[in-house]
Image (cartoon, rainbow, N blue to C red; front, side):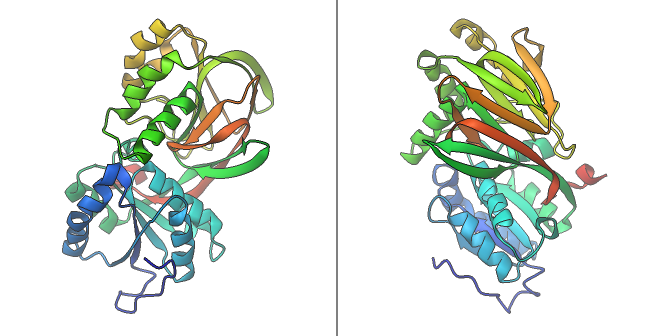
Length: 325
């Protein structure tokens, strides 16, 4: 697949058509296996599109930037949360138009599929595709995180949730398995339990809108959306358009306490635990007494020190009609 895109004159105007970014490796190959089924449904619903396929990490970012330059203003991710993350980073990488002039939709074929959960977007393709045709949209917040790989600083946009500490380690091990072609819906839970014996809590300095907290940190979730880890509701009160991060700070816990409280991560009661604090804020700064791993939208990135900032209502997403009322 060539990187270069051209406007398809057979579309009803490329501006009305979707640029469909397909990740064939999403869901351990589900993206490739199910593309025929998804494309047939797009055709049946008379949704005009041009499909492009990612070939590796970062390719989706480039495809989106080139697609916007070619005239596309509607973008569809056929992949997982990592594919959506690349599309969002592509939107911010392009300089043709404001990001809010674009609309982004998703057909979830990944293993986690957490971004869609906050909006109630169905995983069933036949139910999800009519949402694209209706094109009800809303503006949602975007986070940007500045992180380190060694001594070099990097930045990344994200639209669902970032995690560090224990969460960062679990994500790294999960992603390493995915890269080796191993995966299933319980992969994150498997590594959550297995990583308990390799992880040590760290002493952290956390600033939220200038207020400093010093705490021995087990894990920290920084949410725009509510879900991560394939259905864990780690930020149950997060709203995607309120201009705030929702922080779930899990303090140092015994291994048995972690195991006995996993259910709280799934049923949304994690904030009720006495060793959990919840906060909200627009600016977050974090450093630890040792490098601590970071993930954002399920993608393993780097490590502390970290700086998070919220960009309120800065990207337009296609959602079910009830979300826009």
